[in-house]
Image (cartoon, rainbow, N blue to C red; front, side, top):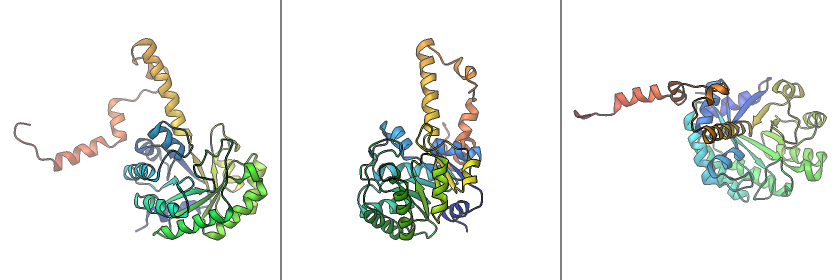
Length: 296
């Protein structure tokens, strides 16, 4: 039987780019699946925002991320990869978190070479660990995984402080250490992205962040450059936050949400909403398995 990890590796190595929208919880993951995508990415920034109401500055823990990962992988029948930040500590913490996340059903993740606690890759002030320390983390992650198809994506944030050449050099070292894919963060132009593609002999991940440092390209444009994967870590929770802000402002100002949904073309029926999370199937299972007493 083909595992989700094997399927994801096939998709990553296919000629066409794999678009992997980012979920911040189980419900957003189900919407991604029902929209027709082939894989899900669990966003670290969105998890921190939705679970803690905190920015992407290293506040989440291995346990909290594993809990969210488990909920997402149980909600969908798709390969799920995730943000594993900087491994939540040293190489041994990285070893432990990869074990936790694989057991939660995750099929791969991106590990970055920032100092703990990390910062969002599109914020200023990032600090890096040495290449040697990152190689130790990569080797620990490779040791930790039990499925050979589990995909380790090595991310470098060296572009900002050390320049593109050093970021490429680090990326090559990370591939030699066992990384399956490279995520070179915060490139500043399509030309830089092409240089990276020509310089690294491994699959590449593009991080598409609305308002971020990297050019906001379409999937076809990324595919033409030669990228294999594209993730969208901000898109889902940016959309949710903007709609919630409008809806609650409407409620505050008018005392009702009666007109809101039609005003913005967002009308969804009660039945449609419940079918997002398979209410009819769950109801059928309930009727089969739950014993009712006579007075019910």
